[in-house]
View 1 (cartoon, rainbow, N blue to C red):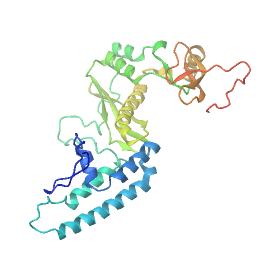
View 2 (tube, rainbow, N blue to C red):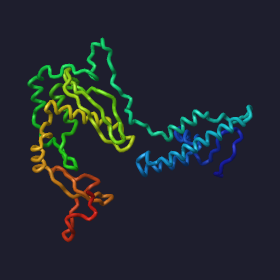
View 3 (cartoon, rainbow, N blue to C red):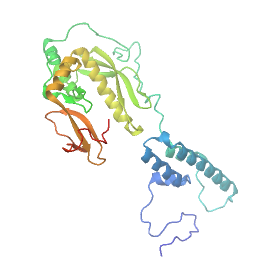
View 4 (spheres, rainbow, N blue to C red):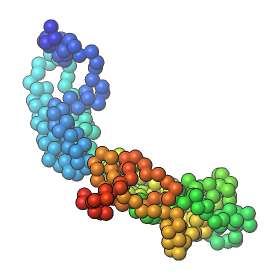
Length: 312
């Protein structure tokens, strides 16, 4: 018989067919007495991908938690002192579980990662504030040749919107070639700032113990889970901007070079999303292939050259 049977020893009631124990997270959710509200809130987030659009579900759950706390408090005060029932969770534990269940970190004030400020008497350079070594002398001829070498055409990539760029890993390779691994680095000049849609932070590029350049990186994100990845992208963006002062990949900031490269090595094509069937134009290198989930779209001879459901 699979029905639940009452227990007289105060233990929770289980179904005989229930072989697996709930994990710690599920137990904490059920302890709040609002598992249904939690499910509704999760469904809302998966549909809308934004906690801020689920205020009604969050408010409903918070209200249910408050009522559950009041009911548990009343049960605690009415129970006899020699009861065999285990003591219910305290209000503090219930509140903690509720907060962790519905909490979305407010990171708009930063990630609490301020640079370490060194003591004034320290012999180390405080790169969070110092401009030590800036423009004191030129780097060696060998380093300059590595930094100023023309970028190979095969290294340049094209984004779908037509922007040409050099992947960030190749900036690092150029710096390693010029100075050697470990002889350069990025030092944060301030804490990470997280806005509603982007992450930004200022960095200093240091090479051979000298400050080379300071730049602020930025990177967009689409959900709170993407903030750590965006913080790493922000660092790479700052590195690219700092490298401008060293002349690395300077061609990619030259409008004439960009126009010539696009004309000779890029093309604009119609593509169709294989799942949604939406069509749009994208830029890509002439020697590249369209990647999944897109495929090349070729209008029929009888149809218009511009698809009716094109997305612009």
